[in-house]
Length: 419
Picture 1 (tube, rainbow, N blue to C red):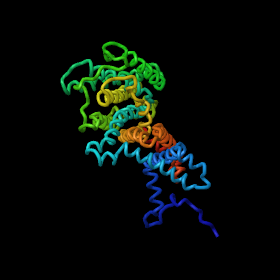
Picture 2: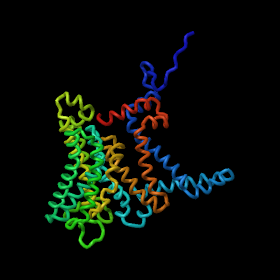
Picture 3: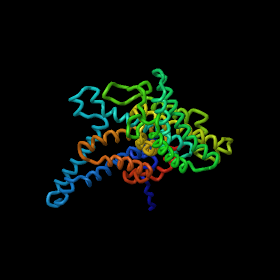
Picture 4: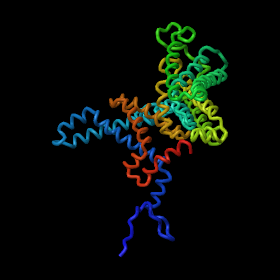
């Protein structure tokens, strides 16, 4: 008697004339949507790993673990208390704080969300900058320097020029875009003309921008007069980005600019001839050159646009969040933007969501540390772990037993960059 071969339920064909089985429908859903689902599961996995780290670093839990075998309930109770309190305060500091909501005004209750969006604004712009270069096949590691140049240009126009209301802020924004675009375009020009690798040139130009800023903060006309600290003059009120809501909320119209920039990048990549060329060069520069495209020109254009977006992030910093330029005006945004772009898979709107997520981490991390004593460095660990899982989707598929997805996740991830 012949035996019927055993096949995977998820891959078996439905019965003729009948609807697909529940397992079959689940497998189809997993295969069609798993890039998004893998991102969500990477977040869940990072939360679990973060909880383990909280337990390890929590002093009461470690003390209870010394007598674990005599009273195991104490260890589990204290571990749960440490983890739950840390994540609850992280949420309260990033989204909604009931302690403030029931004691203060309506606007005070929205302050955590406002801080999240405030932190997210430059991250979105920086992530778009890095992601746009990724789509053109370039690794723009110089968002830090481009952001600094954007802040220098916009800040100088903001405090040295005296223009009417509305005109002043528009001119300052244009100056920031020009500054970032020039600094990014320099790397693109070096790539196109000399073949210099953009990773090397952008990293080196980061150092140039940092030390140039340090020099400017010691020079008269740029440095604030009468101050012993390295700080620039104060930006005029006419050049400030307007606030979206009344005090004490600090979120400003830079958020609107970031969303408009995301819409512009989405249109550029998906609807324009230039965007098609950038994606073609990013997918295969040799095929693009054979098709008659000017690869060098596209490298320069992509880096100019990428630098301009990073320059807008610098404008957000100096014209919106801060009132003067300091040595740490970039606030680590240039390098965090790389992880935001990776989490957003170099796609405009997912990058916006990734920027908001990282903004929530930054806003909530301060509250988490002040109320529970949990080190704010844990937030950086969570961010890194998320990117680690995103970079290894097969690992996430194996952890959550997503049959049929782990083997093809790398191919679908690659499609996400230039699809």
